[in-house]
Image (cartoon, rainbow, N blue to C red; front, side, top):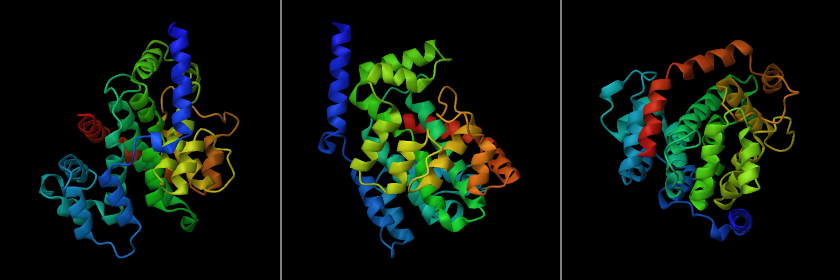
Length: 294
C-alpha cells in the first residue's frame, strides 16, 4: 500500500508540473517587485514602499544591510537607509524578489533539506554568483543582478517538493540525513521520480521569471550546457563547486572547475577572493537563513 501511495504521489506531482495553474502562484509582493524591475523609470521610493508593506521582508533587507561586510551595522535604521547606503537599488530589488517569491512555499525548517539549510546555501550561492559575475573579463555577457537571482532561485525545486508533498519530502529529508554519502539527486528520483532542478524550472517558468533564471535552475547540474544563457548555468555550477555544497554534486565530473572558470573568463585569484569574501560572512548568512525560516 505504501509503494502504491508513493507512485500516486509521483503521478500527481508530474501532473501538477504540466499544469501551471495548479502550482502555487507568485505572491503579490513578488509580482509588484517584478513589475518594478521591468520599469525603466523605477525609483528608490517605489521600491521602499513595496518592501515596507511586508514587515518580514523589510526586516530581512535591513538585517542584510547590517552585515559586517558593508560596514554600517546598527546605523541602518530604515529600509531606505539599507538600500541607499549599503545595498544599492538593484541588489535590494533582486534580494527582495527572491525572498518574497518563496513566501508561498511552506516546508519543514530542519534537516539537510530543511528551509534553514536551503536558505543558507541560497544566500551564499546568490552572493557568490554576483561577485563572480563582476570579475568576468567580458562583463557585458552577463548581468550581475540576474546572476544573483539565478543563485537565489536555483534550488527552489526543493521548496516546491516540500510544499506540494510534505510527507514524501520528510522521507527524502530523512534519507539525506541517514545516508549522507548518497548523491541527493539519486534519492530525489527514488522518492519523487524527478529531480529538484527539473521541478524548479517548471515553477520558475510558471511564474514567468526571466529565461536566464529558468535555464540556470534547469541546467545548473550540467555545466557542460552550451545553449542560450549558458554563462548563467556555469556561474551557478562554479559557485556550488566553490562552496562545496554537501551531497549535491553536478553531473559533469569530467569538467574541472578551473576549466569552467576559464570558459567564463574569471581569473582564479579573483574567484578565490570572491569566495573568501563570502566565507567571511558565514555567521551573518546563518542568522539571515534562520530568520527567513521563522
